[in-house]
Length: 413
Figure 1 (cartoon, rainbow, N blue to C red):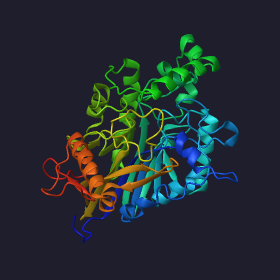
Figure 2 (cartoon, rainbow, N blue to C red):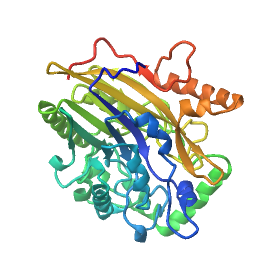
Figure 3 (cartoon, one colour):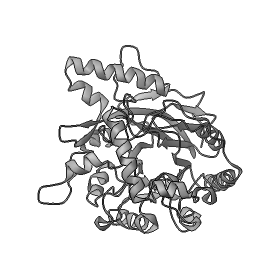
Figure 4 (cartoon, helix red, strand yellow):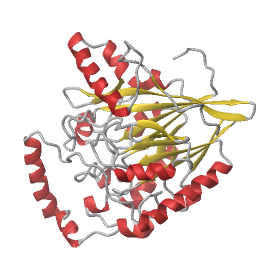
């Protein structure tokens, strides 16, 4: 990468930001309270030149009285976590549309939005009306539209039925009518006795070295009702293109721990191509391919930024500790806006003996490691780069930034 700044703006995207039970326990202080200092500080140098950082907030801040991470795959984090998240960038934008945003209902999501306002963190993906559910961001003459959309909700998984009105509070590629349905069998499974029995089964799986979640792909077809919702979002994207220089989507979609995108997300990306300039994906917990789809750059999954490697749902051997930071370089010359370059850096969530997680750029980790540890990182990165479809410079497997080649000339925005 050249040292001379020959671009106007650099925007960096990050994957899922969450808080798993091992990290929650590790951050608890003897005198009470939770401290997360150091979790994200290792990213300071990497993101220091970014004019804007955008990530996905896959937890809520509903308050201590609701209980922190009270159930299997239910998230609620201490307010103090926001002080550490704030270090990622200024301005910092967080996408709210994901399958965990309603884990504590609309009150929990609204309290989260209020706290983000207090910490001067911008957000997108939720609101009373569509006009409130996407963000217009102005960066020294560059006008950005930032969307956040989810293709699933945890209604069925957690057995917590949501009304259509609640589901319509979030930008979605699913049908609220379909997602709001919870069968009596699912409600029984998610009742207190059902949760107890389910936890026993999951404990046995974990004792055998298996995660709660087996790798799976989202290969189901897009339903007609969901297509109506998708078409509505596409209309909003087209409208945003008329008065913004760049339209970007944080897309929460896919299977989980699957190395290749499923057919559902591929079909979704095919529809988004041409309606947005950048699609930054997450949800599968692992990195997936990052390619141009026509004139739209699509990172199918950037992975989870700070997921605990010892979390009970992690699929062993999936390289889920690694995530991607996607960098988009934008130039503005003579009333012409174009994407000059797209690159990425790879990060790793490193867990110490107490299960406290620190996120570190792989290049920094490699430089500070022993020879045997370096060999392990290099082997992992060979697999990661192949999975993402990213070419490396000969003789330079570990790089701070990997430039992603584009098809033809950078598209004019």
